Length: 351
Ligand SMILES: Cc1cc2nc3c(=O)[nH]c(=O)nc-3n(C[C@H](O)[C@H](O)[C@H](O)COP(=O)(O)O)c2cc1C
Image 1 (tube, rainbow, N blue to C red):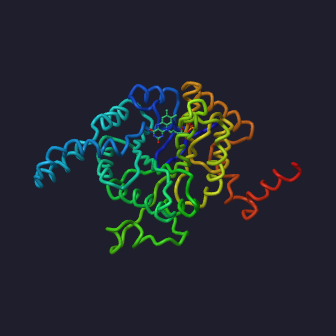
Image 2 (image 1 turned 30 degrees about the horizontal axis):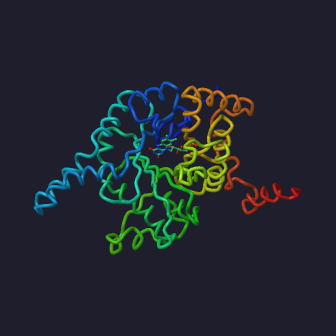
Image 3 (image 1 turned 90 degrees about the horizontal axis):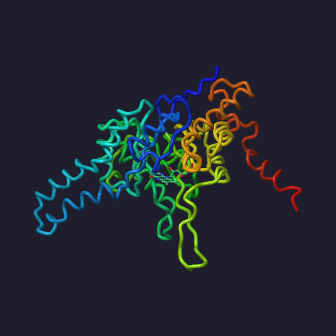
């Protein structure tokens, strides 16, 4: 008897397939369809940090011009308390409409005042929050350490506002990703200073209680950059991934599983049951689906669940835990040669 139930950030999922944040999850009807199609959990379409702060700016614009400080302070508080109401309504209504966990999503680039809004998401009924750190570290003036501190500051800002489980959806453009993952994932092994001096200017002179993320989502897929040689203009690449894109997240899931103290959600390039199996063998807690649902429709969830169960039957596994992480580096007999050996095998004899 196959049992696909999975614990993700302390939430109980009936299976490890999560619909990732996208247009399919931006309405209550969309969320219902995903749930009816068999998803284990649903991440709502992201609200952008700028949407929250723009609403605040709009409210304060007039008062700013006459310089009425007291009114301005009031409106700052008011604007944030208000927040983008439609999104709160979506969280609330989605929660009422389906039984599967609903994960709200914020796409942010800073730890600015939007973090307050996380409290309202919790009050609206979100089961968890996924924070998509959507900035590309492309400035020569920014050191790797500064970029990593920014991730930590964002997490810390959210943590101080809410008790909800928090997942961080991060990009792969980090120089020492294992170190950052250990730091964000609650792990003290990296030897980074967790108390003072790294959590932002206001935090330098006092101890902070650090709580890492409940999950890391690997990886955020930034829009692909392209050039149109006919029009000689910049263009956006394909918004949908292919199965080929699984290799980067697969590598990092396999390297981090069992080594960071948080759950790992595999994202990008998961298109069929075999892709899900690969990620679970590497050590993923759950797998997120997006492009394959756009390409094939929501019926794909059922197909992938069937493929996963067929594979489990063929290999005599009853639960994902029976094989999760079996091929991770942490469980390898030769962890030091874990990847090197595959690399050599792949290249030797290919002239
Ligand atoms: C049309 C579309 C809209 C998306 N919107 C969001 C979003 O609002 N927030 C977010 O975190 N990711 C968003 N994504 C990214 C997906 O959640 C997902 O991480 C990415 O597509 C990689 O997964 P895939 O290979 O299964 O497509 C979007 C993707 C697509 C195709």
